[in-house]
Length: 280
Image (cartoon, rainbow, N blue to C red; front, side, top):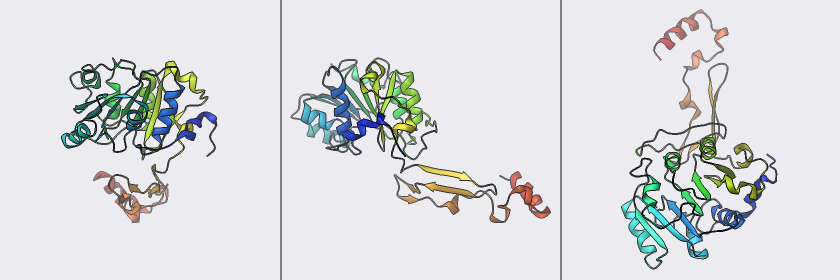
């Protein structure tokens, strides 16, 4: 698929600690802004190093940071990794989406400015809801994880529940971003990057639709049905986080002897199909 120059940020992909080229793109996006306050926030920060989207800024560009990790074991490692760096504030907390546990409340206990430079959100499920719950703080640049198995056109959001890990689609995050005055500027295999609308024109992106900016769709799974009721799987055929293959044979909803165009059913098939539908 051909893409226009709106995707110019892709040329700056590089990984120092990140996973999908985020380090290079984040730095280029921050360099495009007129000023930087050199503050960043990351939650699900893990140990502060593993696939981090902020470690490069902290280590190589002198950024102050708030690193938030809910898992106590990971947080203890994070704290040790940054014990010599007084510019990093480590917080052991799960970021929720209520007034009591949302990011606004957590950050209120720090000295970070309200429109700090960069926010990275990666909590494997409720990312959408955690971002939606932010009202006081408005970072200039946001990197947020989406579920890469969902087609770009689908608007899907899991219900707000810490016990669920379904995630949200790219389109849902784009919709939310617009509600919060953010515009999409780059899409990587697992993360979407947004800029506050006040700075969007600086990036000279003529078409920031998700279908245009998303160039890697290798993880997308497509499911559709034939006229005869056969269910087909195309695209990615592996459950990414479990490594289990998706089998087309296991997706079939209609017995093989009824997989025919309904208008071509004989009398016996019509009778059986009526009974079959009754017990679905």
